[in-house]
Length: 230
Image 1 (tube, rainbow, N blue to C red):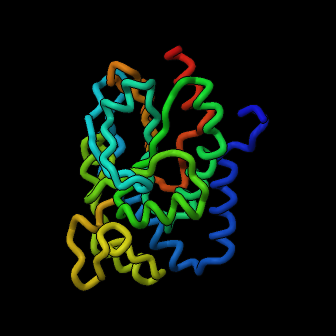
Image 2: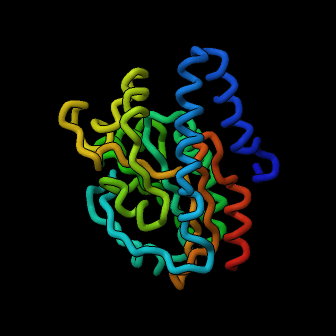
């Protein structure tokens, strides 16, 4: 199937939003909406690394092999698409990861590689990999340290931590194997969902991220950016 024949990723994500609004109590939705607005108001979107700048180098642990993966080694093989995602607990992230799983033939035709990076532990990344049949590396970024270098990391503020606790999402455990009681500030760090395309000179050719977790870069736009490199 060609990419034009596929349902857009945003259409799929909008369906999740519609279902959530139908099922979740208005007061819980209001907390989530405020958290999104507060994050946007920090100006984080202005700090995202832009196209034309050099990409930060990284070496991160692979979920499948438990071996370090180096960005320079990846770029030696071809252009690199990097997807930053929040975690396996986020249905928007899972939908996005599965969309990219299905697009692996399109990436191979463009001689490009794809990796997904999250702050969750290698164990949690491995669960994600196995449960969703992902065909590309999932790399663990403790404390969202590499996400910070790309300008997309933030720390969940205390009032919003209580919201995640109330809906039984244990981000410190997912990110660092910690409980709420011994959680560190680093274990409450997340990236904005983001996609970067890095060319073989380590220059960012495409960059998109949003404070609103319900909005994601459209794969067709990413593939078009790759086409410009060929």
